[in-house]
Image 1: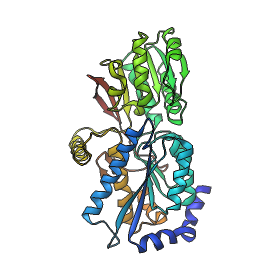
Image 2: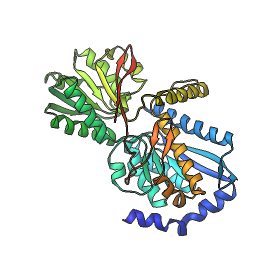
Image 3: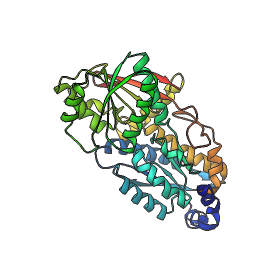
Image 4: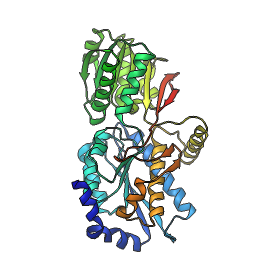
Length: 380
């Protein structure tokens, strides 16, 4: 209730910042935040590129709001995947009087930053945050365009039980908001499916040596190891699993489900022995739309999409479409149109439920062959 009141009071208190200074200059500022430095920089730069691509395309076409041509300006910040840095750059964007924010990438930075945006009356769309806690805060201006860990963890657990016929599982997570959260959701699904949790170990997103926890897990002889964390940890962990002779299937969520995992894991990435899920995905006619986007992205940046670039691109398009529909870049005015939007994007149909979660969010299951991701299926 408190969050709603703050948003309701927003026009009287702060609207001048958007309708006055920014609007008089005919500039609409879109903030973007991701880790541009650190172990996840390859994912953060992927996201930043996609935001820039969307804004460049809109400006090239002559973007208008209420019949007036405006220039979209991207203000990009680096949160280093660090919660403290994330809140600092969130305040920096508030002070810059941005008209909306696309980001953050990591749940651990998105959740604390979201309160700062909410208190300032700024709309936020996350293209990658999967922690259920993000939208369970019920901030009226917080949205996401991917399915949450609640769905991802449960789907992977069902696949492990029904397709892989797994009985005995070990769990590792990196103690981040994302890693621990997706592991917890997987454990719920695994227990519901009748699988046994043989043990649970913890590492950190900064660790490089996993020998002790892997040795402990090896003694429990699991059929499958589930890892909650990012590809920068999963890759080296797979190398060390091979060195220790651990032959269990390795499973994880979207944080490790990247094109870069093959490079990071090297010969530790055994064909068919790694299963992961990306929060998103398309099938049927929509695949051509996605393929076309990937080709345009590669032509512009001379590199392949890493993971969430299509969702960043769509997030920018959804936010700016809401501005056009509301005939205003004032967050308090375009928020109602964003809540009601139905947008056909690169990633499919985007609509939000009452909590700001995407409706009918898809998941894509992958394995790896020859060091490359290979799609298993898209499920909803």
